[in-house]
Each structure stands twice: as structure tokens, then as C-alpha cells.
Length: 447
Image 1 (cartoon, rainbow, N blue to C red):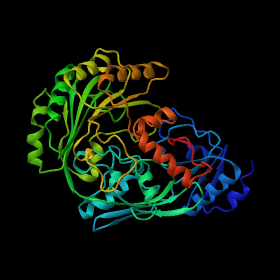
Image 2 (image 1 turned 30 degrees about the vertical axis):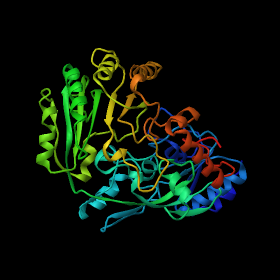
Image 3 (image 1 turned 60 degrees about the vertical axis):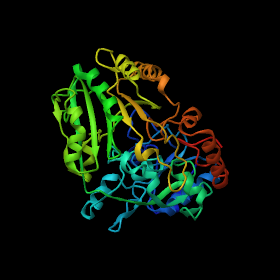
Image 4 (image 1 turned 180 degrees about the vertical axis):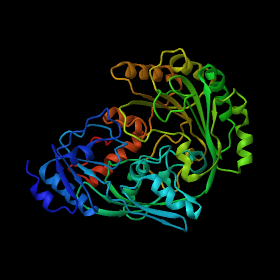
């Protein structure tokens, strides 16, 4: 197929297979997936996105979108990939809101907001793009205090599958406004986003790292302790088996350890008192919890910043009783033979469970915990073991999954991301604005 007609209409760059730019733009953060789009458009502006969608519709091609590649869910075989990384405008308004292009990463927002004492509801890895994260809901390390990032959205500029650029708000195209907040790219490609910031210049935050021999004691203590935490605290616990690589602290490298992450949005002295029971649960190998600028929140989880080949699995839990902790320890604790690099539980609840001021496509607000397993070993061992983890905790699982975590495509994954009512409504929006189902690649429902 000839793409000459498209490339002539672009202000940005067009790249086909064999072009080094194609490989750079098509590669996602998870190197396990090998994307193979028909071609890539590096958009310079929203008009380039419009032109690409219109060309694809006329040629009968599907369209995919990515910026940082963190949300890569499939290989995009034969699709036209719109890369939005150059839509990188970022403006923070001192009165408490921001406008960003689709290529902006959270760290840019945090750094721009910090001089004003403001912050955005980024995820655990601030190198992730703002738009993909927010349209998938946006689970933040301060989520129990401030809720979901998607609920802070004021407006978006969206290119829909019919090739139109629309500004959407609660009163302008409210059905699209509902769909893009939680529905990811199902209803359109977001080229710009406007959202409210929070007044939070600093945090009492960090992680306690414990030796694997204390895993049972620490995990049971964490499960009991977090049940009583106020909404000023957001916490998670992770079983770690980090390889001895540069950047991994020696006390953690090549061994089984347990990390308790803690973020407190109130006064530091109150946060110190709230964390005291976990500091007393066992002797930490490392204690990084301290007062930090919000812009440094990425140090809490210390997620990898370079692409890596991983397999991810996830579940949502409605409770974490002692029996569930025992089940997790048996299948993924020390001595279990677990091949996973990370097995994590994030506590939800608090403001994450609150109904939004404006309804959205984001489901599963009532979940109590998110389970997440990450493995890097090749072959089937990691995959089969991740399935065993889910089975071990099946009695406490809701059956749902958050769109952004353990990203994957296909009808089964979509059915876990949305309840039946939400999925039906999402399909209706897609049919209204994308009648040819051009945007049918990635985490999108069937037409």
C-alpha cells in the first residue's frame, strides 16, 4: 500500500518498516511485545492525528496510538500507529490546573507545578505519560487522599474515529467526556488534556525494606495495620526478588525482600506516628521514609525507568483477611520458588472509593486491594506461576481489573476492565463517533 498521500499531508514525520525511526517509535516499554504496525506517524500537532485517522478510514486500516509505550497491549499488526510524543506542550496555571499535550510525562508536570506548591496525581512511575495514565483511570501513590486522576479532568481535545477533532467537557460532548475518563483510547485519541492539580508541596513518604525471613510477620502486620489507616495514608506492600544489577541497593540485590511503601499527605509527625507499627514489625534493612518534595514521589516505588521484557498479571481483591495473606505467602513468599520479580498489593479505598462529581467509564471503585505480579524470566514458568497466584487468591478476587495495570488486549481482558452496563455504554459511544471502528487496536471493546 502507498502512503504517499498521507505523508504529503503531515507536518510531522512518517516512517515505514526498515526506517530506524520506525523501530524507535513502534517499540513499547514492555520489550516482550514486538509491535509490527504497517507504518508510524510521529504527529507534530492534532491535525496530523486527524489526517492519519481519515487516511486510515479511507484505506480500511485500523489505527493505534502510543506516546511512551507504557500501555502497550498488543502488537498492532498492520495498523497505522500514531505516535504522540511530540505533542509535548505543558502549561501549569498557578491557580491550580494544567494543560498538557499527549506526549507529556508526569515528571514534567510535577517539576512545573512544584514552584507553585502544586502537584498532579501521577502514578508510581512519573516517567509514564499523562494522557494514557489518566484515560485509564490513574491510580496514584496519593490516591486514597485525592482519588483518581481521571476524576480531575476538566477538558480534553479528542480526535474521534470519524476523523473529527473535538473539545470535550462535562457539557460539551458529555458522552465522550464520560468515555475517555477510564475508557482509554476506545472512543478517541486524546491530543491534549486539562486537569486540576492539588495543593501538596511535600509528602512524608518512602519505603521500608525488610529481609525475606520477616515476610510472614511483616505481611500479616501490614494487612492488619492498613485496615485502620486514615485517608491521609496510601500504602502498598511488595515481595521483591531484584537481580544484582547496577542501581539495586546491595541489601536488596539477589535476595528475597519485602517493601512496605508509605505516602502520607498530612503533617510529618502524624505520619511518623502512623507508620510506627510497621517500623516495629521487624528491623528494616533500609528505611527511606522521610519528608520529600512531591516532585520526588517516584522514589517511593523506584519503578524501572528503562524498557524491559516482562510478563504482568493482575487482579482486584475485595478483602485481605489473614487466610488470604497465608495463601499469598504460600504461593509467592520466601521458599515458594516464585519466579516473579515483584508481587505487589496496593491498598485502595479512601477517596478512590468515592463517587466522582462527573460520572466516568472507570469501574471497580469498590475494590479493596490491587494485586500485581511482574516476572522477567522467559518461557512459560512465569506465566503459569502468575496464574497460580491468581488462583490462590481467587476466593477474595472480584473478577475485575484496572485498565492500566497488567495491560492486555482482547475481549476477556476488556470484560474484566468494565462491568456490563459500562461496557455496553462504551460500545454505544464508539459506534456513535467511530462507525467504521477505525480505533480498534489495543484495549478497546468490539464494535
